[in-house]
Image 1 (cartoon, helix red, strand yellow):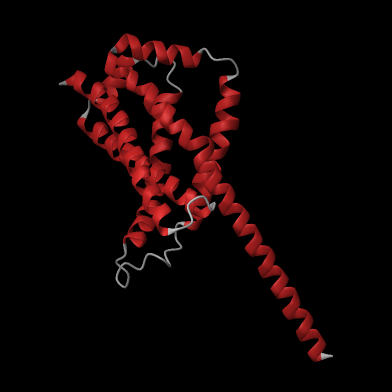
Image 2 (cartoon, rainbow, N blue to C red; image 1 turned 180 degrees about the vertical axis):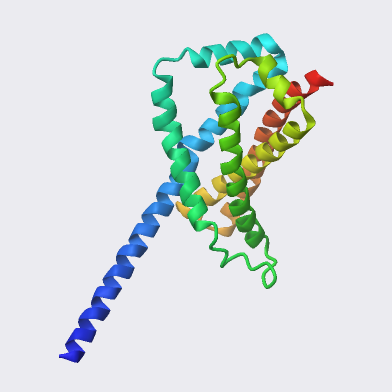
Length: 221
């Protein structure tokens, strides 16, 4: 009886571990997919839209007014942006404490550093998005002047520079990891090439974001 009971318990334990493994795999896949679609696309779009500030107040205000006049904007924001951001961010915070691969005392490989920075920037971005939404999303009088008044302050400008840099790094490195985890780049050479491509994509997006920030900040100089 005891032997049969022990066997049953072991079988049930294996089934539980198997189901947990499948659930973790699915959640990580969804986490990765949400990071690419729609969040990465929205990041590029959002920074590009903000880059209209480089052309002046009228160009930026036109973009803001056009976006705010879109039908069903709130529904789109909640369903396509809000839910994926919450899932990607909260699940990212759950798995962030797992630094098994980031024992930087014993391992100095670049992959350990990129993995570590991916987790750290994830936390920074979660806080950055919360502050950004609180500061600008619900401002009914949002225009170039309102944004410039906030970002022309050195403290806020530095905070946004850090937030943008962290977001772009998370995006570019996450894109590289997406190609690997989804079996798109399998070999070392393919991963090396995609790494170079993702690096330059990140540089381009960073320049777009930082030039928009400078356009706002420089109005106060």
